[in-house]
Length: 72
Length: 490
Image (tube, rainbow over all chains, first blue to last red; front, top):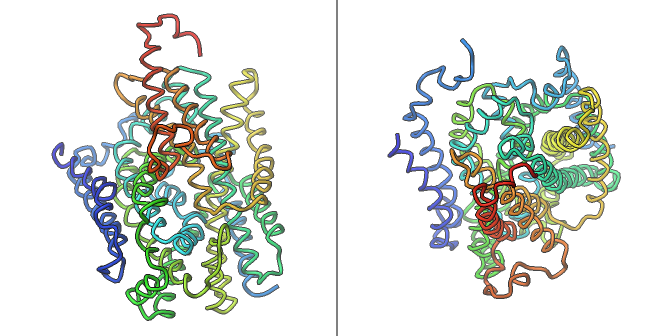
């Protein structure tokens, strides 16, 4: 988990840093201007990364793990 | 009255009825009214959080910004994703602390964390100040929808008054429960409408996306990518950073997260919300499609583009359906915003400042403040001029100033003192006020030693940097070891 967690840094690098290097219209990607397609791509990748982190995070494994405040 | 207006009016009435129905069987204490008894499961929290995204801001503001500015609109797609990734780790500790201390507001959170009465008051004031432009933009959206859908027979002034009255009644009868149930209806409708428009308009008018973007690029070169100066890549980067950090700093976003039953809810939602965000691409398509079809809208009028194009394209009844979706995107978030601001004023300003007040009186004040807030928002809405996106960015510039103090308070050993937190927030907010109210005020005019390029940085983000510098310096100077007497002030 600790290693996988660092994947979450990638969308920040992609969107905040990477955009500067793809700031152009052509070539169109799936009909979208390159810079827009780049951002859309990172939204999808970001969701995928979060899904991987969620599945591997032990805090989500036990169905009752999220309710530590409850008295049972 | 045409069929478009009939459909829009029926939708508003239906929303009121749903709000009333949701209230049945629930005794309306302040906790019920504001955080729904802290007992909503993942789907409702998802929708309330998403309700914050799919406001009239996205629907009209997003398409309008794509129409009027082009590439700068892309920031709206980018910041949510980063905010959700942050939320995976940020929200559970906030929720745990709030639950353990039975807090109902953001201001309580800061008061308790920093053990400072006045910091709580300051946070509440910042919250109210930031919520006003957010409320104004919802009313502006309602005004646009009703005016345009009535084909001009209802004036925009009348439309804004009607919208404000509807939001007020809605909040006063149902509180949070109404907002939650209408969020369900709203999201289903907006999803269908936006995806349809985003596919239909580009194909109908241009024959496809590539054709549309090539036509725009030929007619308006440079619009689809970031410009070298002004709203440049630097503007994009700083705006995305500002809005991603500020995303959960809104008092109503804070209030919405208190409604969750489990902390796991946030982690599951964090995974799904970025994909939900993709609907924005279709919003942009509608705005881009309008560029060459309804040219000539400028200034605050760019927000009309989606509706102008719809009227030119569809029959009145379908304009009514689009308008109905639009009314809900303004009504649901508008009611959450006004509810939050009213709770802030009653619970976080009036109650602490008059300690002997009864519980009933606080609840009563919270409700009584609702119409007053609506009036203030109507006043600013009628002043006009600003685009919807500019209004939201103004709100963000204020709320994001709370981020450094929040993140430090979650650390095991908080490096920030209450004086440091307050000084940073005040410095950041002061810069935003100065630049917003001064006709030619810019960040560089305040700090002339900076290069002119620094003015591309979003003002809210520039203020945030100053905020961090000030709070660091003041925190170092007011460390308990350095000034042992400081702990009982504030």
